[in-house]
Amino acid sequence: MEELVKKIEELKRTRNAFILAHNYQLPEVQDVADFVGDSLEMARVATQVDADVIVVAGVRFMAEVAKVLNPDRIVLHPEPASGCPLADHMTPEIIKRFREMYPHAPLVTYVNSTIEAKALSDIIVTSASALKVVSKLDDEIILFGPDKNLAWYVATRTGKTLLAVPPWGHCPIHEYLVSPYYLRKAKEKHPGCKLFVHPESPPESQMMADFVGSTSQMLKAIGEIEASCYILGTEEGLAYRAKKMYPDKDIFPPDSRTVCIDMKKITLDKIARSLETLKPQVKLRKELMEAAREAIERGLELAK
Ligand code: 13P
Image (cartoon, rainbow, N blue to C red; front, side, top):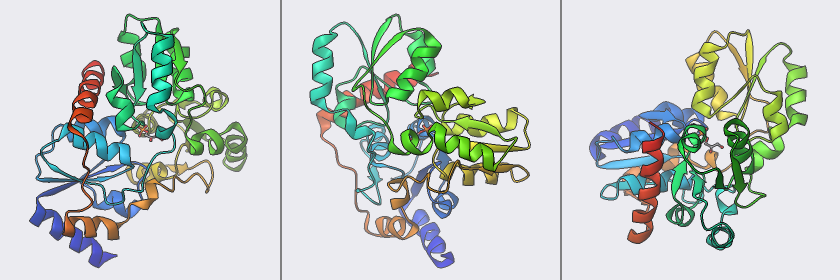
């Protein structure tokens, strides 16, 4: 592994490359990255990167956002099969149906969505920005997709009506493994710990939590909410990042099975290979990129 890390460091220099990683990435991938963060931070950093090549260590939609914000740079996604099942719930056909039923409601779309869905949306939000952005809108009825649980989180805090597009959209990890059942088990195993939960988790899980927020909001909250230990109700990669930031605190994922296999498809080996070959590059249709960019930038502006 040491050899591989050295090779990546060397390739980063020769290619003038920047590695942008999500908080759920494998520990060794987080360690080799130039920036690790949540989806909002990744998008913000992507607007400021001054490198010839950007390597995205995250799932496909994260690589697409980086490309949309950097159309003239080389954006590498080391494993194109690293997708997001949540994103796939919101198809253009479903969007069309909801647009027809609610022609006056804006469509606010979670960043965990396909480039096609983003291109058909008015505003793109992340779990860190959704609440702020929706609060700023004048509209009372909002189409929101594809995560029904994030829609519930925003609706209950803003008092607005968020219609989930589609009503069943969910992340399998949060829906089934950050469920009340596993959280109760985790609380039994680690009594006295504060429970933090991602808003992609079911409403019942959110109601059990001491804090609900995006991955980076949870990291920040560990420093603000005093406790002897913490259970982070989300993908287990966040616990690695949290322990690195707070070495004196006990931090646990809810269960050893809370693993997003798509996030874990990005490995050091694949990063090295993609820096060497400059493949696979993210390539998107120009008109899709332009339409998606407008919605992404609107979201980033409203999130300020
Ligand atoms: P964050 O923006 O909170 O990091 O969430 C991204 C994600 O994919 C959650 O499953």
